[in-house]
Length: 133
Image 1: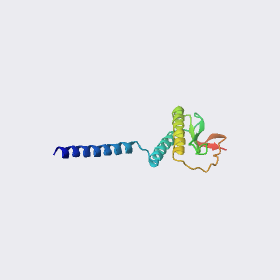
Image 2 (image 1 turned 45 degrees about the vertical axis):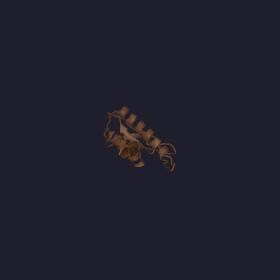
Image 3 (image 1 turned 120 degrees about the vertical axis):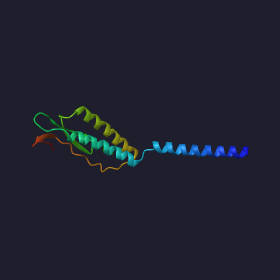
Image 4 (image 1 turned 135 degrees about the horizontal axis):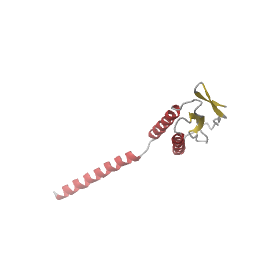
């Protein structure tokens, strides 16, 4: 009977150890899909903040590089005005760009390596900021 109890105890302990090991690893393992979803949420938050800006003679229209292509350079340029918290926007974009760069390296993301044309300026027309090339 003692051998049976010892065997049952060891067997139960091993099963619990395996279950605990599996569940803790699953919680820490990041998947491509979950990281991509996080990037999408960050980008949506950034775009929401930028889109809240107001274009008028009281505020200056500006643009900033958004995203990091695997070959280098931004994916696009985001328009905003000084009517919003510019420091918050710039910090969020810096964080997003770094996370996208890390994501590209980690998952070996391909790119067309085409250069995104940098605007030469931005103007306010009919209460809307417009990029100038």
